[in-house]
Image (cartoon, rainbow over all chains, first blue to last red; front, side, top):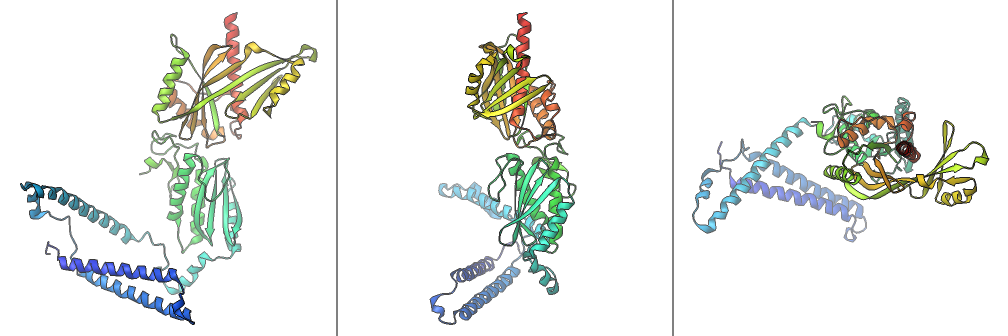
Length: 299
Length: 208
């Protein structure tokens, strides 16, 4: 492979990327503006046509971008500085500064290369798939879309079944905002949590201490519960599965229930209750084994 | 309100109380704590008039952490009955002076700096009775937790880290029976009363 990259090709790829981005932003602009006066009487149809045209543009630009990037050679390893290394031996004063700039940009490209290879390996595992767009057949998709819009009775059923399976975890359902459930959980004398649902999907978690007043937006005044809230958000995303929402809720509740020994159980790795720098108890629970760890000890 | 443990700290010979308080303050500040003002817990005891039958003692305590409350504990036999009232209770005791007389010379208090460290609240109190120094009490509160048995291991670990691993840390007598119950401010007051009574007795021994 030719080690020197064809600059023209690279330039055209970057230009097509720019056009794609601007066409996407045009779509959003048109969407946010909505119906305008110049759409006239049957504005709705005209607006839809306009939107369709814009989306077509996006499609065309995307195809262009794909074509140009496919033509680009894939950099195999880190780049070689080549002759430019001799810049360090430059004697002319006004050119001496060039070398540091060169080194900085070299470091930068090296980092980009490293990060993108990591990102590629992670994304190729497809563990971050959160949309329905590419999840299987159309037959299944029809069923899936209803997860945001489950009848309240079914949500109540799922949550009440979970409530009944734990004696030390009390779950109460309320619906302050229309049909979506807001669930209050009190776990022994240890903590309280509030979970906002959208259909059967969890959207927000807030964990607080036993004596604190629960609400959706204010954080706990104790460091440890702020940490647990942070970890609960991670768990909510980890267990998220649009295809099996019931399982997601159940797994999350099982995970949350393991906090019943938040203060009494020591970290499985360092064997201490408090971590020596953060002075927090083990506020992390492993997703699979539910064993307690300090945030700093979990790796 | 979290679980609080009150611990006596022995003052080494040839050392003053202020020296020990300073040493402990430095230790706590080195851990990353910030000082948040001062605190004061005081205790005054009243004896019932002999005409009322068997003499009973009422202890009146104030804690700067609950500034609007007055804690009173009545000793009657093996049982201690407590009443938590608001600030007017002090005036009420003056009204009752015919029936309950104050033992002024045994008024005892613990005061000193108050520190916050993460979720912990640490108070270093030097105990004085009639302006004479009696000893040092360390109060450590872990605020997120409300039951003592859940948090006892954690508190012991913290106290041992603070006071040195050689110190033996036992749950206070008052807490032993109520480890699984929800902790309330009166439990802290009971712990103070226990240790204050112990300090009063040691003076009595020395006088003899």
